[in-house]
Length: 137
Length: 120
Image (cartoon, rainbow over all chains, first blue to last red; front, side):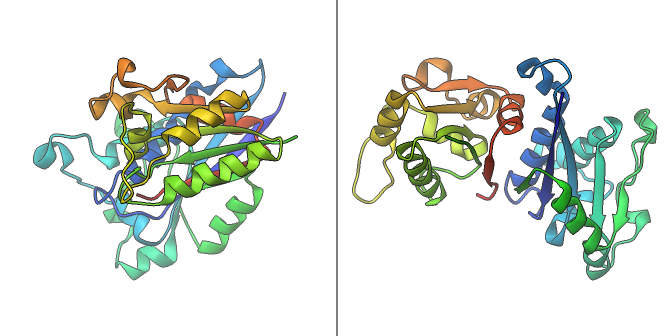
């Protein structure tokens, strides 16, 4: 029985490319990875938003209205619903003038129990140091 | 012998990231390592057969077939990403696999190294 920890680091802008959306969908895929592994083995993913990537966390995204596609906010909410560890870089939020009120912090409305964590970059660095593999998107 | 898992989102034409990733895979396989190669997003363009070699554009089909023939190289495309781009199972070159994203995460489980090229 073993657990492999993956740290997804999202630094891409939302919607400009597919990268941040793919980071989320790949991280969420960790929930079904057991079908390929031996009993008891796990792949555990966390998601950290840094740099321009913190803009993926903005509340009130209108992807469906304007482009007819699901929002990144919706995927981010699903990651919280699945109890994934979510870290958002405080220094980068400050840089954009964003606060806890303007970004997605929980998935309470769909039954989520955990919250996203606004942390300093040093915390995100620790997350990377404890991961087996880092996946920058 | 080790295992390297490479994941990429970059497209075949318009970026040299896939060329780099395939060269790295080739070097690893030549050294006796096993390589799992995952393509998501625009990288699934690599999983489309019938690509023609032009001097101005990247052409990796031949190298990939040689790598598959070694038995130490698995190449897998994200099925949803490919379907969304109109590449269906019958469009896939011989030896290529199509799976969902959890295949990639499972491959990282016992990989000695993971190289993820998440840009476009």
